[in-house]
Structures are given as structure tokens and as C-alpha cells.
Image 1 (tube, helix red, strand yellow):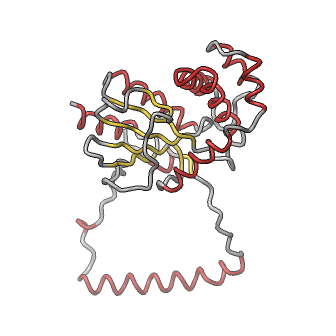
Image 2 (image 1 turned 45 degrees about the vertical axis):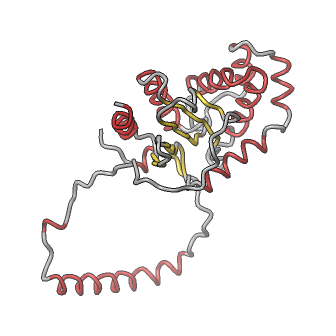
Length: 251
């Protein structure tokens, strides 16, 4: 399947101001004239356009070249599925619990985790896109409450339930948050008390800011850390790219 990252990743809204309509009306014709002039110069300089230079079937590869990003180190205080001490590859995923592409990628990561038992450490970090998913930060808080009451296993069971249940795009009924807690064996009253507090909001925000510093602009966004420390970003829910990377590193 050919993937388009614009369709497979929910983007963080831009804060740039809009240009006025009057400015656009004045600048557009001028820009067209300038662009046409530059194109003509390019054509004359190159002796014409070669068909071989135009590729109309360019495929987007969302596994990027290795990078060095400002990513907070993975520690045992993270939410980790697997063992970071023995895993051959660590995948740090920045995700939003109401993002439909994150829902798809979550299932793909579980499948990869099962395919390569003991070889992958999966790290989940929050990246709530508040402007398009107003419910997601409360859901992130709920998952942290689950972790505080039931440990790491409870965290993963909780987000599994959220992703399995939500229709995404801010569609989860908030009344289900304590129901999920009860389903995984947590004390309902203690969970409700935790959910009403703000004690985990700073943690969620810190993970969001970590994502921004690491170049995350949409969800899902994953960074694969190879055995030699090389970091390779995977933008969007590109399951094929994920599988190719894992097959290359782990087979």
C-alpha cells in the first residue's frame, strides 16, 4: 500500500496568522508572473525539459534518514511494553488517544510486538492535539491515573481499551473512563478521585513538550532507536515502513 503522510498523521494546527484577502488579490498575479519568468530562465539554461527529470510516481518514504533529535532519554519511569535492557530496538511513540491514525498504528505496533517477542521495547508518550481533540488530555490523565493505581500493566490495558472503544476524533464518551478502570480491576472510587485532580497534568504536558523538542508536529510520530543508538523517525501511521524497518533490524 502506498502511503501519504498527510493522510496518515494528524497535524498540530499552525498558529500563523492568515493573510488578508486584499493582499492575496494583489500578490497572486505578481507571484505568477515572477514564477513564470524564473521557469523560462530555467528552461533556457538547461536546454529544455527532459522527461527523465520529471517523476510523476514519486513514493513517499516515511522512514526518514537517521537523525539526532532532542529526545528525553528512555528510563524505567516511562510507560514501556517490553524490556529496554534486552530489546534490540526501542520505539518511542508520541500519540494522541483520539487520533484515528494512532488507533491504527497502535494495533500495528501490538502485532509487531507479538511478531518479535522480546526484541522490541515500545515506549508510549503523550502528545495531545488539544485544538482538534479537546477530550484527549482528560483521557491522557485517565491513563496516568490507571498507571498510578495499577502500575505499568494497568496503563497499557487502559490505553488498549480506549483505542479499542473510541471511534476517534473526539468521539469517546467521557463517562466510559471510570468504566474502563473497573474493567481492568482498579478501584472505581480511587480512580474517580484521581481523575478529578490535576496531579498528572504536568507529566502529560512535559511529554508533549518533549515531543515538540524532538520535532513532532503530528500524531502518530515514532522514533526508532537502534542498538547502536541511531535514531530513525517514522512519521505517520506507515505500517509498511514500520514492518520494513523491523524486518531489516531484527531478522
